[in-house]
Image (cartoon, rainbow, N blue to C red; front, side, top):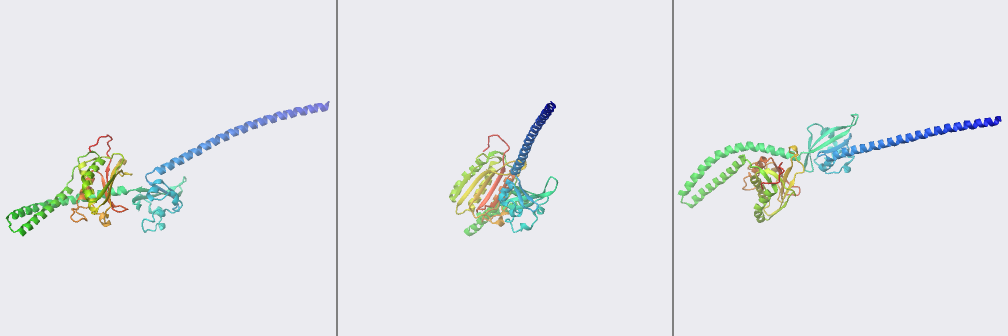
Length: 410
């Protein structure tokens, strides 16, 4: 009986322990489920953080690739780690091809400078930057240290800015200032010379009436002809010096150009010149004096015709300039003329717009100077250079009209 009670007590304790164990197991299961829920929540938060960081990285990467300035990032040893899309266009290389290489490889083909021996981070340091010619572009390059979150310098950032167009506009502004000074002086001289020329022509004409000897009459006729020739050059000079006031109206650049080409087509065909035109698909509307613009285009076409006395090809292209140096990002409409002539002597390029400078016998040397003045009055730009494939390349640019209405003057 005693053993039965003892066994019953043992079963009760066992049942009690089993119940306690079940309760502990239930608590453990509950705790395990709670930990699983917390872990799942942490995983969700971690995944969200990773996605946010990836979005931020992509966002910053898109900004970097969308910049209109080139950006190159290097480590402290000057080895390239990042090259954005604009920098690839400017340098003509792909980032993956130069990754890990010294930044000097981007410049070593430009001149005889040993770029590998120069500390470029120090060379391009400062607010003014340095100008470097790469692939027919003038780039202004700045450098600044690349720092980590704890302000430690871990590399360098090079910013490349294309100032090719700005440089051309600056050159044009300098020429305009020089022309104004020369114009005032030339106008005074022209008036002083024209008065005695008139007297010479008058007395020579009177003398011609009283001469009977044919040889004497021929000599006096030559004097009169020479005086008229000089007077004609003075008239051109005065046209150059006088500030013409454009009668601005909204015109279609295509229409103005087409009219000039149609007008000069017969001359071109007689000279064996094949003129091809490639127009921008959309209308290029500018605020201009169409008659003055026609004078500019006609002058350029005639220069091209004279540069190809044996005939050749002349291509004319209209386009929107890819970038604009003008305030508020105002777009520029360009007309590009390219002939197949011998080009221009490099030593002459800097003087091509100077009054009376000409490489053509019998030329007045005022045509391009007058064209330059007209384009300046229109806040435009003109540049002349030798094309890489040969011939002369003339680029004329005008600010696009800010008006949005459909009507045009031409």
